Length: 115
Image 1: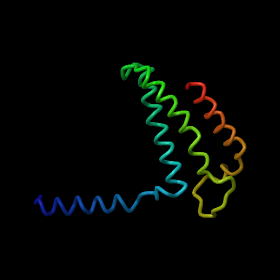
Image 2 (image 1 turned 120 degrees about the vertical axis):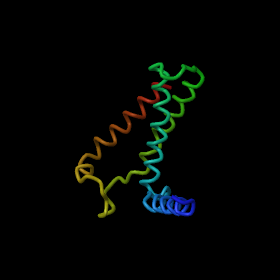
Image 3 (image 1 turned 90 degrees about the vertical axis):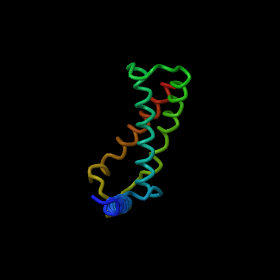
Image 4 (image 1 turned 30 degrees about the vertical axis):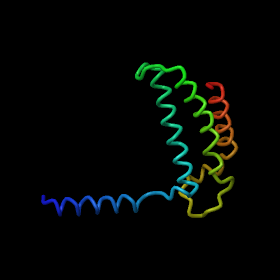
């Protein structure tokens, strides 16, 4: 493949990749970002606990504090009621709001205990 064709293919792929994303300023984008951040921190902490990465006490304490902070982030970006008929959420979600909120509080309390 010539370099012009390769460059064109790369440009097309980049444009297509940019079109399909979620708006990072939307509630969905903010929720996804918060959960991804939580996953990254928890993977690092879990790696230290399982011996996959060297244990660093100061790093673990800082990570636990960060995880505790992040555990409070995503919930503010969830609506309390179904306010958009175009929602892709499972209808059962709206019937289990109390359970969902209780599980969110459980997560917050659990991360506070780690820290």
